[in-house]
Image 1 (cartoon, rainbow, N blue to C red):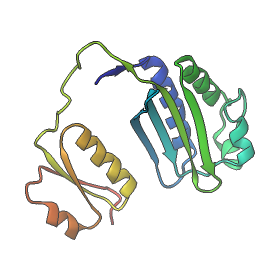
Image 2 (image 1 turned 45 degrees about the vertical axis):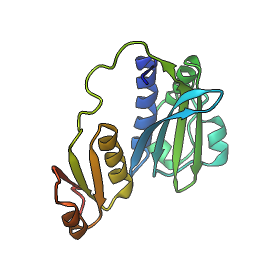
Image 3 (image 1 turned 90 degrees about the vertical axis):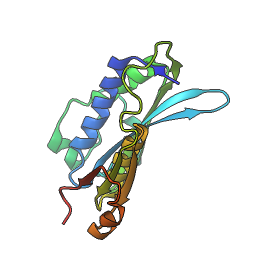
Image 4 (image 1 turned 30 degrees about the vertical axis):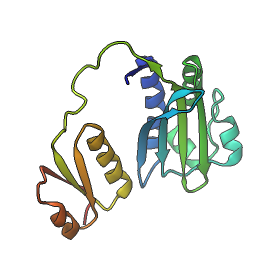
Length: 187
């Protein structure tokens, strides 16, 4: 089933959250995922932006969505900013009938989640939903978070994907493989 949302607002919230995650993540990575959350009483789209950055203190999480507020840490001072991105994101999500939240552990990264109502679209889909149907990929990477995200994207487009962490594992998946994706950071 197709759903619809305000693309400009969703794009702005994603740009703000992903931009912050990238800005504050010196090592590790940023993972963006989207999932549909259906219950008997609601149907929502859940966007999650998780990073391996410095994380937030509990007291910072309580005020991070307020205007001109920033987490008080050295990375914030280093990276600057006006402290408006998260406040704007909260207003946009609220205007779409949604919610936004953050969970974090100091030194272990943060996870921002925003949910908006899943409103059924009436127009037929544009483009092909199964662009990778019949295609098989092998992803060779020691970074399982990234490899899993790539595999999910391939599967969502109708393809099949296997994940390998060593060259020997990748070789065992090679039969019938259309493409081998190799992590450039693989040693």
